[in-house]
Length: 311
Ligand SMILES: C[S@@+](CC[C@H](N)C(=O)[O-])C[C@H]1O[C@@H](n2cnc3c(N)ncnc32)[C@H](O)[C@@H]1O
Image (tube, rainbow, N blue to C red; front, side, top):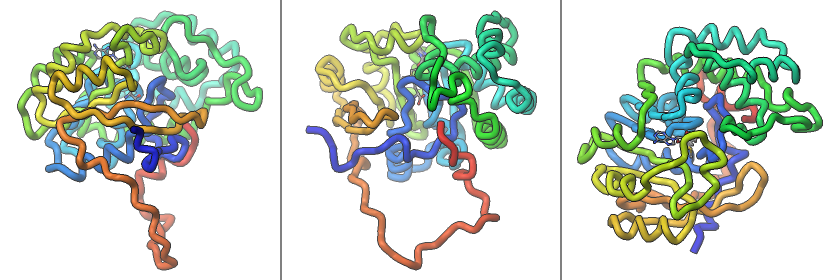
């Protein structure tokens, strides 16, 4: 049975990532905070299928672990993270703020074939913002109409991107980016109680096709991933809800719980939350009604300052 009392509306979740990411895990963010609050503070938060990195960004900006390791196999996505957490973040912000976005300028950037990390990152940012659903895999088309017929401009929010990138860059001492294979990296963190691992692979288990349309790298040995997850001290996985995945979880002694959430199109979707024990995933408390609830002052520094605009 689905956990309908605990539906997360992704439109209401804070955004720290500059990506619009297919299969992005905004719905998981409130749960991420609960999970990490219920355990000893992790020395390391590991996100081996980082993608748009919403979980890693939250942990880094909210200081929920001592260090964050983001792993991503797609060199174009990894390039963006490398630039944001590296020395060229200011140059990327500058490029974003001064770029004149038009269908032609976007098309020219997307048609380019850069070889250098900064330019690969720039191309990825542009393509991610102007493509349907943020899909940068081959075959993903560019927005023609977009929101309100604004085409390529409908998801181009330079100021918001700049704010998010600057905020993330400020937390760079807490973040390591690896362009690598998730399974190989996971091997290095088995049986370590100081590591919390959030695992959100492409959804291609049981021959499902959804993941292969969305990502350039989607072929995965799901059985090996489950075997590794079972040897991690504190893994949390998200998967699509299907019987093959449930069977894998059971075989490797992991709990699996269906979660309902509303996606950006307000459709209620079911996914699976998987882990060694999920007792921390309790229903949301209704907000307390009090006229004396404390308000943040305008001057108070808050990570929410980087979250206010739409993704
Ligand atoms: C479901 S998406 C992750 C979405 C992410 N949680 C978010 O909130 O945006 C899966 C990601 O894994 C990456 N990927 C696929 N195979 C991989 C592998 N073997 N190692 C590392 N990353 C991989 C894909 O490129 C994709 O970005």
